[in-house]
Amino acid sequence: MSCNILIVDDSPILRKAIRKVATLAGVDENRIHEAGNGREALDVIETVWIDLVLLDLNMPVMDGEQFARELRQNPDFKDVAVVVVSTEANQERLHRMRDLGVIESLRKPFKPEDLRKIIATALGVKA
Image 1 (cartoon, rainbow, N blue to C red):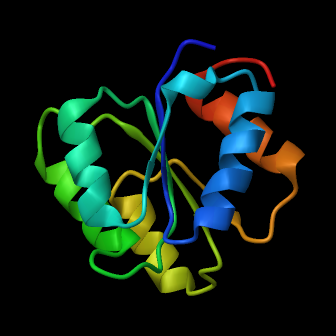
Image 2 (image 1 turned 45 degrees about the vertical axis):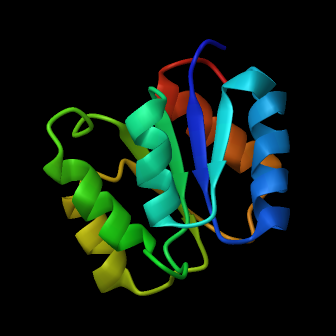
């Protein structure tokens, strides 16, 4: 699968798990990028074209909501697909994320096949 994915999560263990699922979904290992918070993610997006962001909401430095808001303010990145992968249960916050253009959300813990389906759907390919 020819796409660039950015995994944004403050947990290295979860980033590794999401990376594994993405590779199982057919994403080339070299096309998967990581960031530990929203600020790092913005730095990555400035240097590498990203097709899909898999975004945690609860992170230090810059949380997922702040990241999504800043991402959408930049015309170059307003169309980047964003999927929330989080423990977040606050429906109001998730609604705000949808208003920021988040296309899907997946609650942790998740099954690898659920994440695989969301990646495939977000990128417009068969799971």
